[in-house]
Amino acid sequence: MLRLRISTGVCQYSTAAQTSYHPEIYKDIITSGYSAVKNLLPEQCSNQQFVTDNDDDLEALARRFDGPVEFTFGYGSGVFDQAGYTKRAKPQIDMIHVVDDACNFHTTNLRQFGNHYSGLKYLGGAPTISAVQQWGGGVYFNPFVAMASGGKTHLLKYGVTTLESCLRDLCEWNSLYVAGRLQKPVKFLRQENKYIELVNQYNLKSALTLALLLAPAKFDEVKLYETITSVSYMGDPRMAIGGENPKKIQNIVNKQFTKFRHLYAPIMEHMVDGHTLVRTGGEVGRFEKKEFTPEYVSSLVQQLPIGFRRTLGVTSPSGAMEFALDKKRRSRLILAVRQTVRIPAAIQTLKGVLTAGITKSVKYAWEKNSKWRG
Image (cartoon, rainbow, N blue to C red; front, side, top):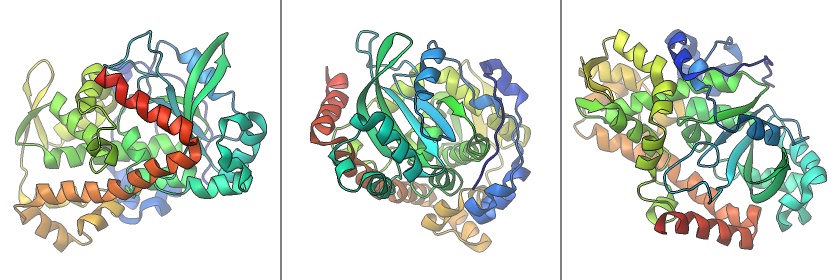
């Protein structure tokens, strides 16, 4: 059981420069993955802290749940404004609870908010729900839930995942389901456990490393953040069948550019200080990759999450060098991402019919589709 409880403060964007990325902290995670998380020591990660216009409402909603929660984060258009929505549309607020014991949480939550659950609750209760939760990306969602807070009624979609599942994905990339969401700006709403924020710093570094391996010799920040954002959508069946806005990636980055810059600031500084990147100017930040020799590419790929390296077929230094010399290495990276994302994302989508029920599933799919089609 990983428990490290601290008090937290909310930091402004400008504090990102106060956070430095220390690669030595993550050496054991690179070689051993999740089993090394318990050896980490706490560190301030102010680059992951954001302030929104409705912090009080969001935090109050997150704390309405009596079930034991280790960590809660909010994301999406209901938390951060995005293109395709209007104030009048009032999109769902998306959040995910990370819990130590799924069955314990669902037992309490069924007593408190039994009406949030589909008919699955009648087929074994919390143990069945917890078992279904493990399928796919390891998250159980209750969508289109109306919850009152601060004299207002909010429409909420909340997910539940376990601490182990979350941390494994962050440091091994076994599904990129939760890790992919945390590679983009999110709002921390409850922080009882510091490990997630700390391990996510490695997840961010890995996402940036992957984006650099995919990027051309010269690029700007917008394209870099679009590449990072696209990772968790590669292989996602919703993108292929039109369930998501084809411009979603560009919309996210355009609306949240300053947040992405804040989020990745210490890691970009680490890359610049290490002469991996050279700033070449420009308002949005233009960069040039330097010294991307086969030896350096080999060292970069060996720093990627251990589960992803296995999918990529890089399990040794010699395998990393073989990859670095491969003219098709970019295609191999994209294929490995798709193989990581495809099956968990497909299962997660299909199990939504069980966890949300047919009516809510159809409503959710319709609203997701119609909001960008107009």
